[in-house]
Length: 211
Image 1 (spheres, rainbow, N blue to C red):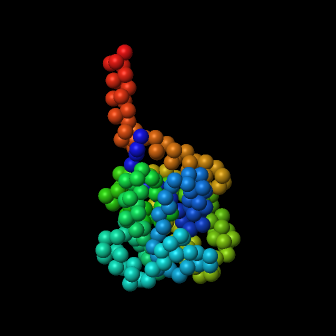
Image 2: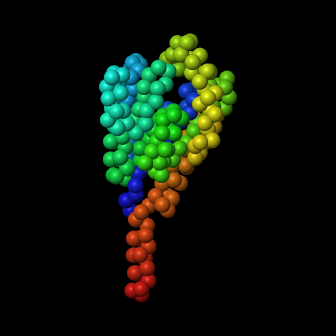
Image 3: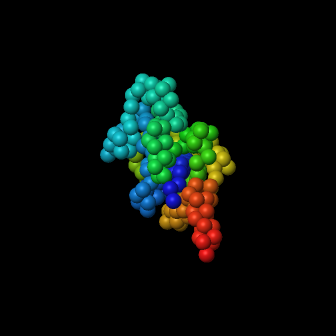
């Protein structure tokens, strides 16, 4: 039975683990389509254009927004980030779920869009603020100034937790992964996510009539 694809949103303050959980979810179900974001920031070591992000100039990004080609976009730490709309709509028509690794601003825009009824939103919390800072430093990717900026912003980001359908506390990555899989599996099985059920049940009724 063909179903309409879901938009699965993962959000968290930087360092809480949403990117790790996103990668694990993709490994668990290779049919998931990852929404590759466009950004105006510079690539980090090892990042590849078109795989990790679509790296665009500020001018090109603003042109895409003006043309209505972004499902959501926001400015974060002086750079623009956004999700191209076309690939998401096509995946939904094909019955494939799309996974978004985006912040609360992007999640809010997607939930308020014309595709909002197909959204499942999940917010990931750290077990403590001290652990959040430890994880940011352990990545060894950002300067002290950037880490301080991320920590300063984390309080505002966490304040949006109640806007989400589900909240995971990532004190153990394996347990958080298992909970995430449970959420996705249950949401896929919702009656209103399976438009072919009515036809299937009509077939069962015809079998009763034929007995």
